[in-house]
Length: 238
Image (cartoon, rainbow, N blue to C red; front, side, top):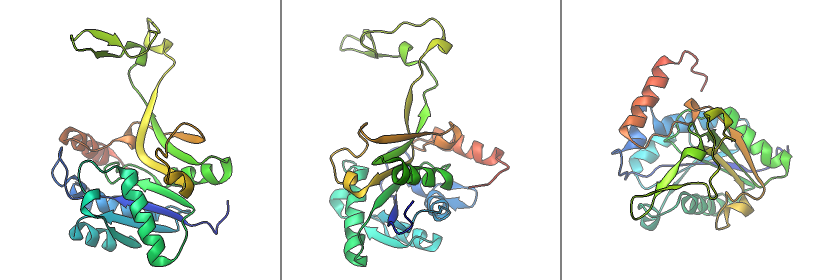
């Protein structure tokens, strides 16, 4: 791949959170989720800059101490529950480009609440775009329950199959399988970043990761699971 490309990682963390208060400050071992995200990103071979975007000076100080290259403070309208992550990333990229007089080629979105990402998957996503002629890449994980057995409830609380038409199976192993975003790595070209939906199916490369690496801390139960995985791990590779 072209080593002259500007590949910017963006770690985003705001201070307000509904499910778990100050969840970006939760710790695994001696590190907050912010520190962990920054440190792992810095182990990537292909990121050329690491941006941290936040609405909180304390968070910014933590990220700087951990090694983040640039800090971007987001405006109030991008700090509430309604702002999308992609809006925040677009704002951060524009601000850094103005400050450093550079042009971004690729952007990698990194959420602190997925603490088991590896630098290897960051680099795999970047290489997929550079070498595979795709415009976006993301990590995915397998759904552990057959989608053929899933359903939703209508206004009368009646069960309606997710698949239409239904695709009946008798055994789990007969399922075609299904996946969902893992949340650990999203990589896009700058051009794709500034579209309405950077992760549309067209020209998208998917990287499957195991369940453990895809733990997303959104509730206290998620945090308990993450701590259990951390405590039982002997590797500490990331």
